[in-house]
Length: 461
Image (cartoon, rainbow, N blue to C red):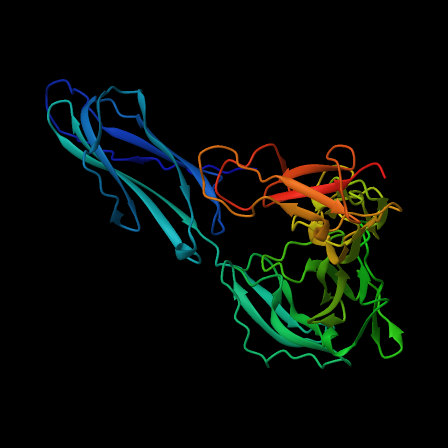
């Protein structure tokens, strides 16, 4: 049940006189100052109370004006403008102030006197001072027991701390004995040290570290070291061993696949193209460190060949096989190259076919995959022109009317005479004449300065 403090302060003045005339009663001033703390106390640090002050004119004279102040242990609480009121008639009251006060740690264990002084001017000009006080006690700060224990609950140090004071540990340095490959390092207390608000037990906290084995010192094996490019994903099986124990991926280590020449270290999910690759192994769990293992996908070897052909002599320019064949190209891939077939006119064997340097391979989607191939060999086809079974005209059978002349601005071709076996042959019956330029191309006139050929081909018998 709450108690309320009420202080009644008054000054009673009585006067008597022995006179012969009728006596008139004197006006008596009185002011009741009611100071209320709710709740009244005693208080603990951090508590608060609602303070209200009310003045009641209990006399029979009007207080025309008044100022007032309040004090804590005689210390006047300063203000720029004095508190004041006016015209408090007999029987009337006035609320002077109301506020909430909070009790701090600094005041713990003290008794505080709250005082109100009212400086009043009465009707008629007389001045009076009215005083009221109220004392309250702030309990001393509570003291809490603080216990420090080791990780296993064994006591290390016991002390005390007053409310809101952070306890200080002054016991032996906490240590925990290592266990096998596991070591312990003291890191602090659980919970963290903080202002005391209740009895508290703090437990030593340790960082646990297990000695790890460097995975680079163990055996890293792969099922193969190199394979030829086949257009598909090819990744060998990796085995990591600690002695005879096979370590488990994802538990003892992780693996990331990289191109060996990729300095940006872009992780891969497959190995398809020709080149060198790295398995990058990173220890985890009981293992630490890093290691790597290399494997290669070699370029696929390819050969291109053209078949040889044999044809009968016709007296005209003849050409060998133009179609080429490629060996070992991956199914679905297409290899291309520019090829000029062998060619000739006279009977004989010609191996003047040639390949350009534009070898290219594309996959079924049209993507250029040439880098995955190596052109190991190119075999051009030969052209064989078989001689006719009839008598053949030779160079000794042919006579020209001239073999050299001076440019004259018109076509100049010498006359041809062909004899065989002592007989002069007839043109267009026994032979034909073809005019060729220096590149063995058939032409119809010899107009410009240069070298020309007359190709005589037998005909009929």
